[in-house]
Image (tube, rainbow, N blue to C red; front, side, top):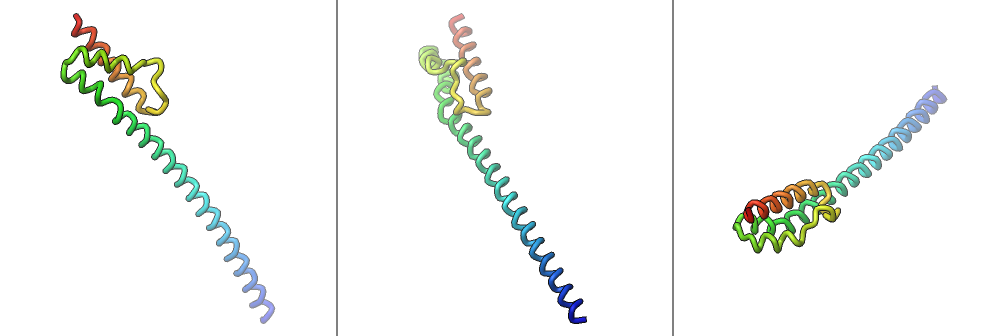
Length: 109
Protein backbone atom coordinates (compact mmCIF):
# COMPACT_ATOMS: atom_id res chain seq x y z
CA UNK A 1 0.00 0.00 0.00
CA UNK A 2 2.81 2.38 0.91
CA UNK A 3 4.57 1.50 -2.32
CA UNK A 4 1.41 2.19 -4.36
CA UNK A 5 0.96 5.54 -2.66
CA UNK A 6 4.59 6.42 -3.34
CA UNK A 7 4.29 5.41 -7.00
CA UNK A 8 1.05 7.35 -7.36
CA UNK A 9 2.68 10.40 -5.81
CA UNK A 10 5.71 10.17 -8.12
CA UNK A 11 3.44 9.75 -11.13
CA UNK A 12 1.37 12.76 -10.05
CA UNK A 13 4.49 14.88 -9.53
CA UNK A 14 5.77 13.85 -12.96
CA UNK A 15 2.45 14.81 -14.57
CA UNK A 16 2.42 18.15 -12.74
CA UNK A 17 5.99 18.85 -13.92
CA UNK A 18 5.04 17.96 -17.52
CA UNK A 19 1.98 20.22 -17.36
CA UNK A 20 4.06 23.07 -15.94
CA UNK A 21 6.59 22.68 -18.75
CA UNK A 22 3.83 22.55 -21.38
CA UNK A 23 2.20 25.60 -19.84
CA UNK A 24 5.51 27.49 -19.86
CA UNK A 25 6.00 26.61 -23.56
CA UNK A 26 2.48 27.80 -24.43
CA UNK A 27 3.03 31.01 -22.48
CA UNK A 28 6.36 31.67 -24.23
CA UNK A 29 4.77 31.00 -27.63
CA UNK A 30 1.84 33.29 -26.85
CA UNK A 31 4.21 36.04 -25.72
CA UNK A 32 6.25 35.67 -28.91
CA UNK A 33 3.11 35.90 -31.04
CA UNK A 34 1.88 38.93 -29.10
CA UNK A 35 5.22 40.70 -29.45
CA UNK A 36 5.26 39.99 -33.20
CA UNK A 37 1.70 41.33 -33.54
CA UNK A 38 2.63 44.47 -31.61
CA UNK A 39 5.71 44.97 -33.79
CA UNK A 40 3.56 44.72 -36.94
CA UNK A 41 0.95 47.09 -35.53
CA UNK A 42 3.62 49.63 -34.58
CA UNK A 43 5.09 49.42 -38.07
CA UNK A 44 1.68 50.01 -39.66
CA UNK A 45 1.06 52.91 -37.27
CA UNK A 46 4.41 54.44 -38.27
CA UNK A 47 3.45 54.14 -41.94
CA UNK A 48 0.11 55.81 -41.30
CA UNK A 49 1.78 58.59 -39.32
CA UNK A 50 4.16 59.24 -42.21
CA UNK A 51 1.23 59.53 -44.62
CA UNK A 52 -0.64 61.85 -42.25
CA UNK A 53 2.45 64.00 -41.81
CA UNK A 54 3.39 64.35 -45.47
CA UNK A 55 0.14 64.40 -47.48
CA UNK A 56 -1.71 67.40 -46.00
CA UNK A 57 0.25 70.12 -47.88
CA UNK A 58 -0.60 68.45 -51.20
CA UNK A 59 -4.24 68.04 -50.20
CA UNK A 60 -4.42 71.64 -49.03
CA UNK A 61 -3.08 72.89 -52.35
CA UNK A 62 -5.79 70.90 -54.15
CA UNK A 63 -8.56 72.13 -51.86
CA UNK A 64 -7.49 75.77 -52.12
CA UNK A 65 -7.41 75.58 -55.90
CA UNK A 66 -3.98 77.24 -55.96
CA UNK A 67 -2.34 76.02 -59.16
CA UNK A 68 1.11 77.41 -58.33
CA UNK A 69 1.09 75.86 -54.85
CA UNK A 70 -0.18 72.56 -56.24
CA UNK A 71 2.58 72.45 -58.87
CA UNK A 72 5.14 73.26 -56.19
CA UNK A 73 3.86 70.45 -53.96
CA UNK A 74 3.78 67.98 -56.86
CA UNK A 75 7.50 68.50 -57.47
CA UNK A 76 8.06 66.74 -54.14
CA UNK A 77 6.11 63.66 -55.21
CA UNK A 78 7.40 61.18 -57.77
CA UNK A 79 5.14 58.12 -58.14
CA UNK A 80 7.93 55.81 -59.24
CA UNK A 81 10.06 56.80 -56.25
CA UNK A 82 7.56 56.74 -53.39
CA UNK A 83 9.44 55.72 -50.27
CA UNK A 84 8.71 52.49 -48.46
CA UNK A 85 8.03 54.42 -45.27
CA UNK A 86 4.40 54.67 -46.41
CA UNK A 87 4.07 50.88 -46.25
CA UNK A 88 0.51 49.76 -46.90
CA UNK A 89 -0.54 53.42 -47.17
CA UNK A 90 1.50 53.71 -50.36
CA UNK A 91 -1.60 53.03 -52.47
CA UNK A 92 -3.44 55.92 -50.83
CA UNK A 93 -0.50 58.23 -51.45
CA UNK A 94 -0.34 57.15 -55.10
CA UNK A 95 -4.06 57.85 -55.52
CA UNK A 96 -3.80 61.34 -54.02
CA UNK A 97 -0.75 62.21 -56.15
CA UNK A 98 -2.52 61.00 -59.31
CA UNK A 99 -5.59 63.02 -58.39
CA UNK A 100 -3.42 66.09 -57.86
CA UNK A 101 -1.77 65.61 -61.26
CA UNK A 102 -5.20 65.28 -62.89
CA UNK A 103 -6.31 68.50 -61.24
CA UNK A 104 -3.27 70.34 -62.59
CA UNK A 105 -4.10 69.13 -66.11
CA UNK A 106 -7.77 70.07 -65.67
CA UNK A 107 -7.03 73.50 -64.24
CA UNK A 108 -4.58 74.32 -67.00
CA UNK A 109 -7.26 73.08 -69.39
